[in-house]
Amino acid sequence: MQPQKFHSTAVNDHIENICQHISDPALERLFRQCYPNTLDTTVAFQMVDGLPDTFVITGDIHAMWLRDSAAQVWPYLAHIQADPMLAGMIAGLIRRHSTCIMTDPYANAFNDGPGHSQWQSDNTTMLPELHERKWELDSLCYAIRLAHGYWQRSSDRRPFDQQWLAAMKLAVATMQAQQRKENRGPYSFTRSGSWQADTLACDGWGNPVRPVGLIASMFRPSDDATVLPFLVPSNFFAVVSLRQLASMVSELFNEIDFAAECTTLADEVAAALQTHAIVQHPEHGLIYAYEVDGYGSALLMDDANIPSLLSLPYLGAVAQNEEVCQNTRRFALSTNNPWFFKGDQFEGNGSPHTLAPMIWPMSIIMRAMTSDQDEEISHCLHMLKSCHAETYFMHESFHASQPQQFTRSWFAWANTLLGELISKIARERPHLLSAKDRHVSH
Image 1 (cartoon, rainbow, N blue to C red):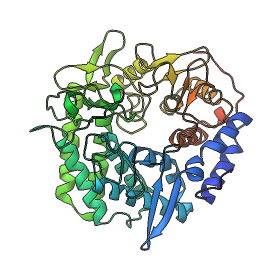
Image 2 (cartoon, one colour):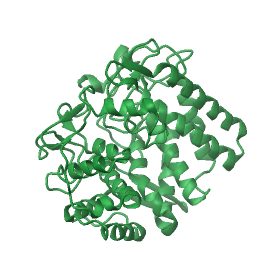
Image 3 (cartoon, rainbow, N blue to C red):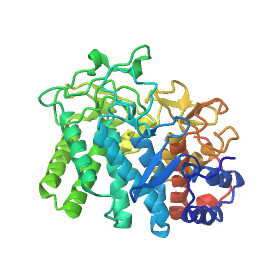
Image 4 (cartoon, rainbow, N blue to C red):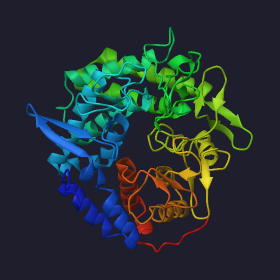
């Protein structure tokens, strides 16, 4: 067994506290292994010139995604007041995010300094610091989300220096450029010799959009190319992130003009979503589309990767009991969603990234995260503790009828997210952890 890369007494104490309330040995083992997996295996923490610096790999790919790294450490924010070293590690990641965004705000994944990438031949502006340069709007949103979450829980201003402010201004300028009001912006991307979802249409610029105030995202959080570039879940995420950023720069830097710029952009995107992202479904009524183009075209589906339509309440983007949200949830968890798969024991959303009929545990976790029904949450827990093929780790995806057939044995984000779910249940519905497993087939 590899030694822990990062040790947190507060996280270990939390694990012991939660496990006292879990009656199912299989679920307890799953939680014990999954919740600390990011700390155990993916964190490289050091002090550089007296300041914390953190690089977090995604798992079996030795590179750092802005999205994955922010999501991987997110549940540990609950423990930073009890563990200064843990707080320092996350502060170091916020600093690293700033460096990455200043290097290239369009890149999704980075090397630990200049290095080699298997994607260095991509037809885009590749730098030695980049692992991959796929423009994904959610990448910038995740960096803002982590910074805001850290600031709220710690009141520590030290990570928020002039470089962080410059990175945030560049992030917002990038979002504005990708509204494509005057031109297509500076970003294009093609990849040779790969499958369709790994490259962009129209000579690297993506399919056309009509500028309506939404922000184009050329790739999804799955790293797959969008079909219609206005990716609705990521635009909802951007609204939340921009409002968070406005509050931060106003209070931390007294940047009133920049705060107003963030709020104006958030308001514009929010209004455009209400106008262009809601469509009439013949069975489910008014729902949110997954992608739109501003011309009236809409792609009706949901992908397991977060941000997804299913995850919008989790991200604070829409109210869980809002009618369109509830209609969209029913759509996403039905066979009307082409990426919803159902086997004899398991059901959940997959992704074109792993093809059919592969279910992502992440989608089952998010279904439970956004449910207020004991029976549904219990059903999700049963599937989660049955789908890991005796590894007691969450995988990227597994076959809907054969869980021993899975992708990515080391995928830290899914592991930590599982730990976040069980921690949430322990706070809000502890009886579900102490109850015997009463599986109900759905």
